[in-house]
Image (cartoon, rainbow, N blue to C red; front, side):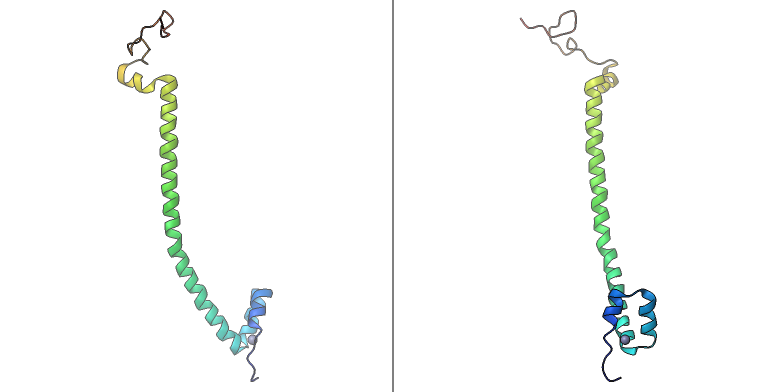
Length: 112
Ligand SMILES: [Zn+2]
């Protein structure tokens, strides 16, 4: 066989692993080609790990920011509704009268 075997590409793409390995076992041209592909594959695996790291870092930062914003908004919403921070500071939620506004018997602000 003086002509170089060119089955590797078609076997690699269109056939299964077992057929490819069987052909590689008794074809030196394809074995050489397969070794080259293996080197490229190893290189890609090595590079892939390098590219993964910053992606997870960005994900962690995004999660931290999300929790920070949602947590902050949640505390603010609960405080607006139940006066949690006022209760912690003064023992009871502050009324309009406590804040210095003129109020009627219902605790509503009086406007003259
Ligand atoms: Zn071959």
